[in-house]
Amino acid sequence: MNWNSEIPLALSYDDVMLVPLRSAIRSRREVDTSTRFTRRLRLSVPLVSANMDTVTESSMSIAMARVGGLGIIHRFLTVEQQSREVARVKRAEALVIEDPHTVRADATFDEARRLMAEHGVSGLVVVDADRRLAGMLTSRDIGMVPDARLVSDAMTPRARLAVGRVDTGGEEALAIMREARVEKLPLVGDDDHLAGLVTMRDLLQHAERPEATTDERGRLAVGAAIGVRGDYLERARALVAAGADVLVLDIAHGHAEHAVQAVGAVREAIGDAVDIVAGNVATSDGARDLCLAGAAAVKVGVGPGSVCTTRIVAGVGVPQLSAVMACARECAAHDVPVIADGGIRYPGDVAKAIAAGAETVMIGGLLAGTPESPGDVVTREGRRVKVFRGMASAPAAEARAHAEDDEFVPTVPEGVETVVPLRDPSSEIVRNLVGGLRSGMSYSNAATIAQMHANATFVRITPAGLQESHPHALGR
Ligand code: XMP
Figure 1 (cartoon, protein in one colour):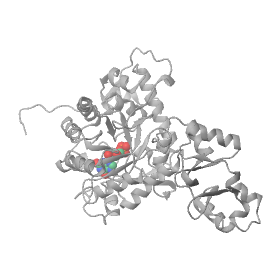
Figure 2 (cartoon, helix red, strand yellow):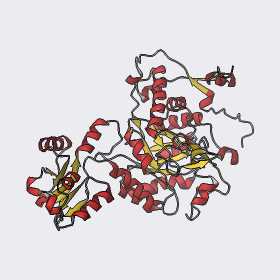
Figure 3 (cartoon, rainbow, N blue to C red):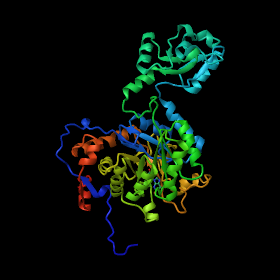
Figure 4 (cartoon, rainbow, N blue to C red):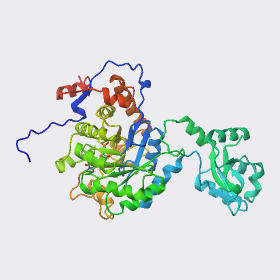
């Protein structure tokens, strides 16, 4: 302790306001919210769902990627379970289904019907013993020939099928399907071997939603969290193999030396295929060390989260606005984006986080209780609610007591468990938050996130200013 030094002041979202600036923006629709999650992964909406076990598994990730954000699947699952969640997101949508469900021509009709119901699909590709294309069987065929006994009795045989080649592009596939008036197009490679399946629905969905976050194959993008101990390298490799587009090395004290070193170890384990995000830190020194270790984005936030008690229990943390500003300044020198993680209560907080230099914002509490968040709906005191808990809370720690060597099980809890009322779908929550951000950007004369970083201006406010900011006509 340096007894003579002055203690610096640190601020949070409630301590400041964005100043309205002379603005050339005529409409909020003119504002472009596209941004970088990592050095290589771009999003059209700067929002990411938190890697918490009551916030993000596959459903949330699918919903977030569809609206242009991203979900980070939490790591408090077995390696197999977490990989399966990643794979579910990757299978939810694709330009080409690379491993379509198949059936043999000599299978019984009942068997085909059972397979369709089991996989929830409306068509099966018929293949021979060598996986060569033999025909297609769709639910339409089933309706037409209800008394068929074998698949071959009802399928459209190979000779009458519209077929694409393995390298047929999206537009060409659409043209072939329209010409043939079919909704599914099998693709074949050499020797007529089945190479994939394209569906009209997937192609149209893709065209209708250009903002969705997808990989180069049109599959929705997804991130996955890992720790820094135990099986973390094996987990990292398995998640990348399952299709994760980014790994988030996430521990409470991301500036611990073993956390900084883990960035390099993970990079060595997975190669250069996907970016690694590291965190959490709250200081420029922490941000610098993670950048130098090879992080492709730095996650900032020690203690601002809605169910965190780190600041109360350990007395540690940095108010989030100052933490984001300090880290963003440092990360800019390394061309590494910052993720502002935790503490978002209002849409205006998103605008302030971005103005402070973050390129994306991570949301936990506001997305809990949505239909896409994990966990069952329960009734408490007559209200329908879902559980939401800090990852370092006692119940969360207990739930994974079997997991050995878990750094997130602290000696005393640093988080709490609560329940939240059932909320609107996450797409609505995101729409609301993005609406606030667009508005904040237009007041700040910012047509892009980069302009928001450059132009936005804060004033500090007093408790009287904060009180004035919230609605106060009620109850007069
Ligand atoms: P919000 O405010 O959006 O914050 O709910 C989500 C972030 O909170 C962090 N988190 C924790 N921090 N103890 C903590 O100190 C905990 O138990 C805990 N659980 C989650 C995490 O960074 C998350 O993204």
